Image (cartoon, rainbow, N blue to C red; front, side, top):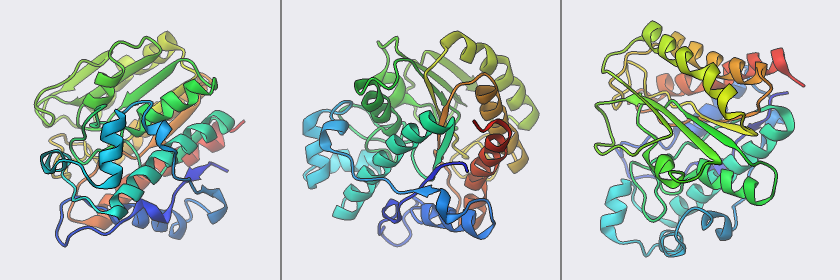
Length: 304
Protein backbone atom coordinates (compact mmCIF):
# COMPACT_ATOMS: atom_id res chain seq x y z
CA UNK A 1 0.00 0.00 0.00
CA UNK A 2 1.12 3.53 -0.76
CA UNK A 3 2.70 5.05 2.38
CA UNK A 4 1.00 8.25 3.56
CA UNK A 5 2.00 10.59 6.38
CA UNK A 6 -0.35 12.51 8.68
CA UNK A 7 -0.54 13.75 12.24
CA UNK A 8 -3.48 15.35 14.07
CA UNK A 9 -0.88 17.90 15.15
CA UNK A 10 -0.76 19.23 11.59
CA UNK A 11 -3.66 21.45 12.70
CA UNK A 12 -3.59 24.17 15.34
CA UNK A 13 -5.99 26.93 16.31
CA UNK A 14 -6.02 30.09 14.18
CA UNK A 15 -7.81 33.41 14.68
CA UNK A 16 -11.35 33.50 13.31
CA UNK A 17 -11.32 34.52 9.65
CA UNK A 18 -7.58 34.11 9.10
CA UNK A 19 -6.86 33.53 5.42
CA UNK A 20 -4.55 30.55 5.93
CA UNK A 21 -6.73 27.41 5.61
CA UNK A 22 -5.26 25.52 8.59
CA UNK A 23 -8.14 23.03 8.86
CA UNK A 24 -7.46 21.66 5.36
CA UNK A 25 -4.89 19.17 6.68
CA UNK A 26 -7.38 17.34 8.92
CA UNK A 27 -10.08 17.57 6.25
CA UNK A 28 -7.72 16.04 3.69
CA UNK A 29 -7.01 13.11 5.99
CA UNK A 30 -10.75 12.63 6.49
CA UNK A 31 -11.47 12.80 2.77
CA UNK A 32 -8.85 10.21 1.88
CA UNK A 33 -10.39 7.80 4.38
CA UNK A 34 -14.05 8.54 3.65
CA UNK A 35 -13.65 8.28 -0.14
CA UNK A 36 -11.74 5.02 0.07
CA UNK A 37 -8.57 6.51 -1.38
CA UNK A 38 -6.67 5.34 1.70
CA UNK A 39 -7.07 3.05 4.70
CA UNK A 40 -5.97 3.81 8.27
CA UNK A 41 -3.15 1.28 7.92
CA UNK A 42 -1.48 3.39 5.22
CA UNK A 43 -0.89 6.36 7.49
CA UNK A 44 2.38 6.87 9.33
CA UNK A 45 2.59 9.44 12.12
CA UNK A 46 5.69 11.66 12.35
CA UNK A 47 7.58 12.70 15.42
CA UNK A 48 8.81 16.15 16.42
CA UNK A 49 12.28 16.55 14.89
CA UNK A 50 15.26 17.51 17.07
CA UNK A 51 16.32 21.13 16.75
CA UNK A 52 19.64 19.96 15.36
CA UNK A 53 17.77 18.90 12.21
CA UNK A 54 16.22 22.34 11.81
CA UNK A 55 19.65 23.94 12.24
CA UNK A 56 21.04 21.98 9.29
CA UNK A 57 19.23 24.60 7.17
CA UNK A 58 18.18 27.44 9.46
CA UNK A 59 20.24 29.67 11.75
CA UNK A 60 20.16 28.51 15.39
CA UNK A 61 18.99 31.95 16.54
CA UNK A 62 16.04 31.93 14.15
CA UNK A 63 15.07 28.39 15.18
CA UNK A 64 15.26 29.31 18.86
CA UNK A 65 13.35 32.56 18.49
CA UNK A 66 10.52 30.95 16.60
CA UNK A 67 10.23 27.83 18.74
CA UNK A 68 10.31 29.85 21.98
CA UNK A 69 8.02 32.65 20.80
CA UNK A 70 10.59 35.44 20.90
CA UNK A 71 10.66 36.20 17.17
CA UNK A 72 10.49 39.88 16.25
CA UNK A 73 6.92 41.03 15.42
CA UNK A 74 8.09 42.31 12.02
CA UNK A 75 9.47 38.85 11.22
CA UNK A 76 6.14 37.30 12.23
CA UNK A 77 4.26 39.68 9.95
CA UNK A 78 6.46 38.57 7.06
CA UNK A 79 5.48 34.97 7.82
CA UNK A 80 1.81 35.93 7.99
CA UNK A 81 0.85 33.62 10.87
CA UNK A 82 0.26 34.65 14.50
CA UNK A 83 2.61 32.85 16.89
CA UNK A 84 1.41 30.56 19.63
CA UNK A 85 2.85 27.36 21.15
CA UNK A 86 0.50 25.28 19.00
CA UNK A 87 1.83 26.84 15.82
CA UNK A 88 5.40 26.08 16.86
CA UNK A 89 4.47 22.47 17.60
CA UNK A 90 2.53 22.15 14.35
CA UNK A 91 5.36 23.63 12.29
CA UNK A 92 7.95 21.24 13.68
CA UNK A 93 5.63 18.25 13.32
CA UNK A 94 5.11 19.04 9.62
CA UNK A 95 8.89 19.11 9.10
CA UNK A 96 9.11 15.71 10.79
CA UNK A 97 6.37 14.55 8.42
CA UNK A 98 8.37 15.43 5.32
CA UNK A 99 11.49 13.72 6.72
CA UNK A 100 9.39 10.62 7.35
CA UNK A 101 7.85 10.87 3.88
CA UNK A 102 11.35 10.95 2.37
CA UNK A 103 12.40 7.86 4.34
CA UNK A 104 9.27 6.00 3.25
CA UNK A 105 9.84 7.01 -0.37
CA UNK A 106 13.36 5.56 -0.28
CA UNK A 107 11.96 2.31 1.12
CA UNK A 108 8.84 2.05 -1.08
CA UNK A 109 9.55 4.10 -4.20
CA UNK A 110 6.78 6.63 -3.51
CA UNK A 111 5.27 8.26 -0.44
CA UNK A 112 3.00 11.26 0.14
CA UNK A 113 2.71 13.70 2.99
CA UNK A 114 -0.62 15.37 3.77
CA UNK A 115 1.20 18.64 4.51
CA UNK A 116 4.55 20.20 3.59
CA UNK A 117 5.96 22.31 0.81
CA UNK A 118 7.02 25.36 2.85
CA UNK A 119 9.31 26.62 0.12
CA UNK A 120 9.34 30.33 0.99
CA UNK A 121 11.32 29.75 4.21
CA UNK A 122 14.90 31.10 4.09
CA UNK A 123 17.76 30.19 6.45
CA UNK A 124 17.11 33.07 8.87
CA UNK A 125 13.55 34.20 8.19
CA UNK A 126 10.15 32.92 7.13
CA UNK A 127 7.81 34.28 4.46
CA UNK A 128 4.47 33.59 2.82
CA UNK A 129 3.07 31.26 5.54
CA UNK A 130 6.37 29.29 5.50
CA UNK A 131 8.50 29.06 8.65
CA UNK A 132 10.94 26.15 8.26
CA UNK A 133 11.79 24.75 4.82
CA UNK A 134 10.71 21.12 5.15
CA UNK A 135 12.08 19.83 1.85
CA UNK A 136 15.46 21.44 2.49
CA UNK A 137 15.65 20.06 6.03
CA UNK A 138 14.66 16.56 4.88
CA UNK A 139 17.33 16.74 2.18
CA UNK A 140 20.02 17.68 4.67
CA UNK A 141 18.96 15.07 7.24
CA UNK A 142 19.06 12.22 4.73
CA UNK A 143 22.31 13.46 3.21
CA UNK A 144 23.90 13.69 6.66
CA UNK A 145 22.81 10.12 7.38
CA UNK A 146 24.37 8.95 4.12
CA UNK A 147 21.05 7.72 2.71
CA UNK A 148 21.17 10.00 -0.34
CA UNK A 149 23.64 12.20 -2.18
CA UNK A 150 21.88 13.81 -5.16
CA UNK A 151 18.41 15.37 -4.86
CA UNK A 152 16.01 16.84 -7.40
CA UNK A 153 13.29 19.20 -6.15
CA UNK A 154 10.39 19.54 -8.58
CA UNK A 155 8.35 22.53 -7.41
CA UNK A 156 5.05 23.01 -9.25
CA UNK A 157 3.42 25.30 -6.72
CA UNK A 158 2.16 28.43 -8.51
CA UNK A 159 4.67 30.54 -6.55
CA UNK A 160 8.41 30.27 -7.10
CA UNK A 161 10.24 28.20 -4.49
CA UNK A 162 12.45 31.14 -3.62
CA UNK A 163 13.60 29.97 -0.20
CA UNK A 164 14.56 26.56 -1.55
CA UNK A 165 16.41 28.12 -4.49
CA UNK A 166 18.37 30.39 -2.13
CA UNK A 167 19.27 27.60 0.30
CA UNK A 168 20.72 25.39 -2.43
CA UNK A 169 22.07 28.15 -4.69
CA UNK A 170 25.71 27.00 -4.42
CA UNK A 171 25.10 23.29 -3.86
CA UNK A 172 25.62 20.98 -6.85
CA UNK A 173 24.17 18.05 -4.88
CA UNK A 174 20.64 19.56 -5.04
CA UNK A 175 18.96 20.59 -8.30
CA UNK A 176 16.01 22.98 -7.88
CA UNK A 177 13.34 23.17 -10.59
CA UNK A 178 10.52 25.70 -10.19
CA UNK A 179 7.69 26.12 -12.69
CA UNK A 180 5.55 29.02 -11.52
CA UNK A 181 3.44 32.00 -12.52
CA UNK A 182 5.84 34.82 -13.36
CA UNK A 183 3.61 37.69 -12.21
CA UNK A 184 2.94 36.42 -8.72
CA UNK A 185 4.45 36.27 -5.24
CA UNK A 186 7.31 36.56 -4.46
CA UNK A 187 7.94 39.90 -6.10
CA UNK A 188 11.69 39.34 -6.04
CA UNK A 189 12.52 35.92 -7.46
CA UNK A 190 15.61 33.90 -6.57
CA UNK A 191 17.56 31.87 -9.12
CA UNK A 192 16.69 28.17 -9.17
CA UNK A 193 18.85 25.76 -11.15
CA UNK A 194 15.96 25.79 -13.62
CA UNK A 195 13.17 28.36 -13.49
CA UNK A 196 10.22 28.15 -15.89
CA UNK A 197 8.11 31.30 -15.47
CA UNK A 198 4.59 31.01 -16.88
CA UNK A 199 2.24 33.76 -18.11
CA UNK A 200 -0.97 34.53 -16.26
CA UNK A 201 -4.00 32.57 -17.39
CA UNK A 202 -2.19 29.47 -18.73
CA UNK A 203 -4.55 26.48 -18.93
CA UNK A 204 -4.26 22.71 -18.79
CA UNK A 205 -2.96 21.79 -22.25
CA UNK A 206 -0.33 24.51 -22.49
CA UNK A 207 0.83 23.82 -18.93
CA UNK A 208 1.22 20.08 -19.49
CA UNK A 209 3.06 20.72 -22.75
CA UNK A 210 5.59 22.97 -20.99
CA UNK A 211 6.03 20.46 -18.17
CA UNK A 212 6.61 17.59 -20.59
CA UNK A 213 9.21 19.62 -22.49
CA UNK A 214 11.43 19.69 -19.39
CA UNK A 215 10.57 16.78 -17.11
CA UNK A 216 11.99 13.65 -18.72
CA UNK A 217 15.28 15.18 -19.84
CA UNK A 218 15.72 16.86 -16.45
CA UNK A 219 15.33 13.66 -14.45
CA UNK A 220 17.66 11.79 -16.79
CA UNK A 221 20.22 14.58 -16.50
CA UNK A 222 20.17 14.92 -12.70
CA UNK A 223 19.91 11.17 -11.89
CA UNK A 224 18.79 11.89 -8.32
CA UNK A 225 18.79 9.47 -5.41
CA UNK A 226 15.49 11.07 -4.37
CA UNK A 227 12.96 13.48 -5.88
CA UNK A 228 10.92 15.86 -3.75
CA UNK A 229 7.72 16.87 -5.51
CA UNK A 230 5.85 19.98 -4.35
CA UNK A 231 2.36 19.44 -5.76
CA UNK A 232 0.80 22.78 -4.82
CA UNK A 233 -2.76 23.12 -6.11
CA UNK A 234 -2.67 26.92 -6.33
CA UNK A 235 -2.26 26.82 -10.16
CA UNK A 236 -6.01 26.01 -10.13
CA UNK A 237 -8.27 28.58 -11.81
CA UNK A 238 -10.34 29.05 -8.64
CA UNK A 239 -7.39 29.61 -6.32
CA UNK A 240 -7.46 33.12 -4.89
CA UNK A 241 -3.66 33.46 -4.94
CA UNK A 242 -2.94 31.60 -8.17
CA UNK A 243 -3.38 33.47 -11.50
CA UNK A 244 -3.13 30.31 -13.64
CA UNK A 245 -6.15 28.45 -15.05
CA UNK A 246 -5.67 24.74 -14.40
CA UNK A 247 -8.73 22.57 -13.77
CA UNK A 248 -8.96 19.54 -11.47
CA UNK A 249 -8.31 17.42 -14.54
CA UNK A 250 -5.23 19.50 -15.29
CA UNK A 251 -3.88 18.98 -11.78
CA UNK A 252 -4.47 15.25 -12.12
CA UNK A 253 -2.66 15.14 -15.47
CA UNK A 254 0.21 17.13 -13.98
CA UNK A 255 0.61 14.81 -10.99
CA UNK A 256 0.35 11.71 -13.16
CA UNK A 257 3.00 13.10 -15.50
CA UNK A 258 5.49 13.78 -12.71
CA UNK A 259 4.95 10.56 -10.79
CA UNK A 260 4.74 8.18 -13.75
CA UNK A 261 7.82 9.68 -15.41
CA UNK A 262 9.91 9.42 -12.25
CA UNK A 263 8.82 5.94 -11.23
CA UNK A 264 9.10 4.55 -14.76
CA UNK A 265 12.75 5.62 -14.67
CA UNK A 266 13.22 4.05 -11.24
CA UNK A 267 13.58 7.22 -9.14
CA UNK A 268 11.81 7.42 -5.75
CA UNK A 269 9.49 10.37 -5.06
CA UNK A 270 8.54 12.04 -1.79
CA UNK A 271 5.50 14.24 -2.45
CA UNK A 272 4.18 17.15 -0.38
CA UNK A 273 0.94 19.05 -0.91
CA UNK A 274 2.20 22.65 -1.20
CA UNK A 275 -0.08 25.67 -1.39
CA UNK A 276 -3.77 26.01 -2.03
CA UNK A 277 -6.12 28.85 -1.09
CA UNK A 278 -9.90 28.91 -1.44
CA UNK A 279 -12.72 30.02 0.84
CA UNK A 280 -14.52 26.83 -0.23
CA UNK A 281 -12.58 24.41 1.95
CA UNK A 282 -14.24 21.28 0.56
CA UNK A 283 -13.30 22.24 -3.00
CA UNK A 284 -9.76 22.99 -1.87
CA UNK A 285 -9.38 19.68 -0.05
CA UNK A 286 -10.68 17.85 -3.11
CA UNK A 287 -7.88 19.46 -5.12
CA UNK A 288 -5.24 18.43 -2.62
CA UNK A 289 -6.58 14.87 -2.66
CA UNK A 290 -5.84 14.65 -6.38
CA UNK A 291 -2.16 14.09 -5.55
CA UNK A 292 -2.97 11.09 -3.39
CA UNK A 293 -5.41 9.70 -5.95
CA UNK A 294 -2.78 9.94 -8.69
CA UNK A 295 -0.09 8.54 -6.42
CA UNK A 296 -2.28 5.57 -5.51
CA UNK A 297 -2.81 4.77 -9.17
CA UNK A 298 0.88 5.15 -10.00
CA UNK A 299 1.99 3.13 -6.97
CA UNK A 300 -0.24 0.22 -8.00
CA UNK A 301 1.25 0.38 -11.47
CA UNK A 302 4.91 0.57 -10.43
CA UNK A 303 4.93 -0.87 -6.88
CA UNK A 304 8.14 -2.73 -6.03
